[in-house]
Image (cartoon, rainbow, N blue to C red; front, top):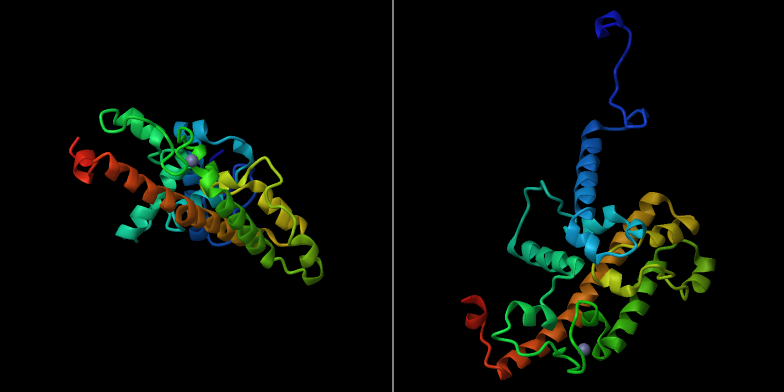
Length: 244
Ligand SMILES: [Zn+2]
């Protein structure tokens, strides 16, 4: 049978499960492109190696925040956008230049892999966020992030009860949020409090951005300042690092 034999049938684009696509087709294509970006990213080997509890990650929000809301395919770009995105990609992949990585990649320049901040242990990508020098800051960031999370829940009477409730019940920790992962449990918590899926999505993305930016400004940047002093003591210059 050919389609010409069915003149009264109107063909609609459908999802894989045969449900009709609702709403504007252009908006649908945009969502589809975002989904493709997130699916592609989540299956990258480096992401898989570095991210535990894969199925508990809100990948759409994670990728959205990774790109600063400016997804691939957009014509907008700038130096600062590229630089911020480079940091976020490295943080997510566990590829920030920690002392351990520097020692492996430039053994002629760096003679040990000690954390430049505490000078106690090797600086791995895990230690980077868990260094004893950052304990106080991390505690503050968790408190601020938790307050931001509950601030938007439109349940005034419950707010006082909820405001102390942890937002990392597991399996993800604040260190995962520092790396840019948006835990799926955040959406479950908010939807459980009566927020619509759309509103919950807005909240989790905002809170996710807060943790990434706080980790950059209050953990990574002070650590880099300590690293600069360490490099100066070893007479390592920008030129010696880039002329390799
Ligand atoms: Zn340390």
